[in-house]
Image 1 (tube, rainbow, N blue to C red):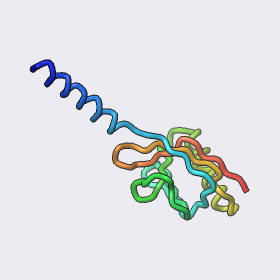
Image 2: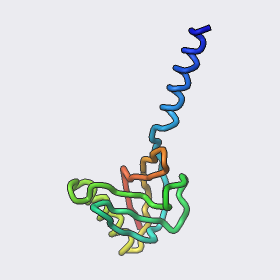
Image 3: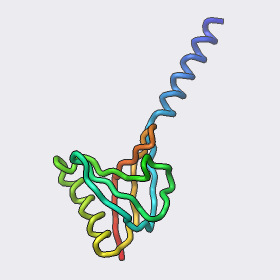
Image 4: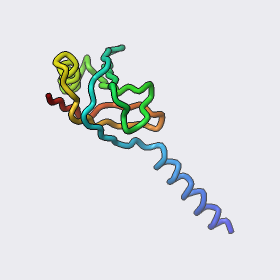
Length: 109
């Protein structure tokens, strides 16, 4: 009997760990509605709904003050906003609390 209980406890721990891991999402052809920066983290909202329920309906771009790649990604978002272009593809990670962080941003006319 103890062996069965240990097996269920182990399975529960594995399932709980899997539920708390981040997932990735992709969205296509979005227009940027707003941008901002707070404490070195950039963010943007889109006019169209995202495929995942992101916290505050925002996709964050972290570490702008220390990561040139992240700054380039944010510059792509700003350029799309200013030129009236679409974000043709955005890939982002979603953590267990719904916080969405960009991993890829691509714009096109």
